[in-house]
Image 1 (cartoon, helix red, strand yellow):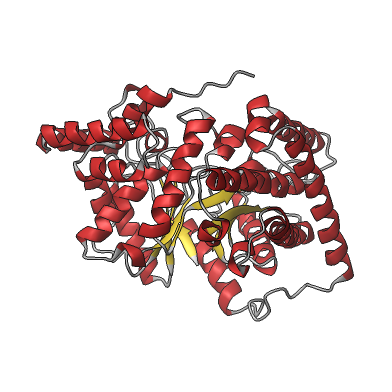
Image 2 (spheres, one colour):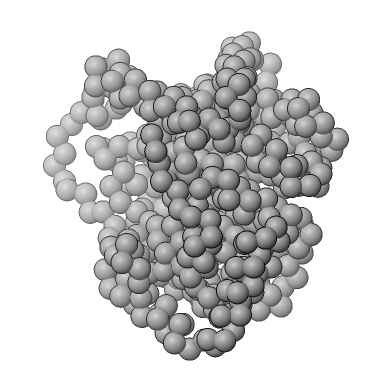
Length: 472
């Protein structure tokens, strides 16, 4: 079981993590705020109003130390939702663990590190796609020896689905992205079986119960075929689709938010029946705001009821053999294969993204769904049917606005107290590596150790790689 608690300040999030660990959580997930995701420090002019809003603000090693203060990183598994700045945040995490006396080779967890879906569906990119892919493959190579138990990427269909894709598109575009990452790693000289066992995936769970179960089954089967037939993987572990599932945030409604508890339970059950290895359940009030503590507890209890009371965890594939489920699995796999073939014909996922093909397909699906809702062909309980007139105004959770100024003062104190010569030397080493074929991870680690901030490291790479701007 895994649950998010990261938003606001590092200190506040630390308290939430300690509470969750006391409640039987076996893994932690941390989401970072928008400036951190975009490679901006909290005092950047574009960060104004966004600090700590959708995740925890991390500007430097000092923040990461505070986030995990008193939590033994060698004893927990941590999943970090971070992409463009994934290499930096992973280095900060490693340094915190080592300050605790941990052996980095025993650290376990996942860094999302999936930049392609940012260009497709989410938008928290910094660099153009090809240099961004270089950072990812450098992380693969470095972690292969330095962090052997770490999952170096979580290839995400979640955000693709949240952007409006169908279930089939979620499978197809996610696996097409995985093919691009594997191709890039092999081109960089890595052996398929040296990194494939550490690849992991992140899927969405929506409301169509049987379709979602079949979706997960189809994805697992198709991925195994891709790894065996396309990449000639030899290890069974290289062919395993190891995935985390989060219930569908876009399915939650602001109208009658208590009904979202039912939606989340259905989605979570579908994920478990479909074979997920890890699960996050959304809070009932997430259509209104960040979840309250009560909502987060109900979401956690939903997982615990499924795990401890439902009995569905006894069999790994309890619906296997069902005539309908098998037929639906076959249909979804075939449809996903067709999409992957079309993407291959365009030159692969990277070229398809650069041409806007995948984005266009998702936009069309999102439009068709919204049209069906507005025409009453797709029922959404409480929205276009079974409405009631709300008599109570919801009380959404609000992040304390004072935290932004506090965080700004923290990052400025870090800059004032560090060694200027160490900072300059570390950034110079990063510049040399970025302009050559050197692996970027060791100089990024040196920068983090010297208290160079997330924004400063990102700016150094921006000056060399440039910034991405959509052109279609």
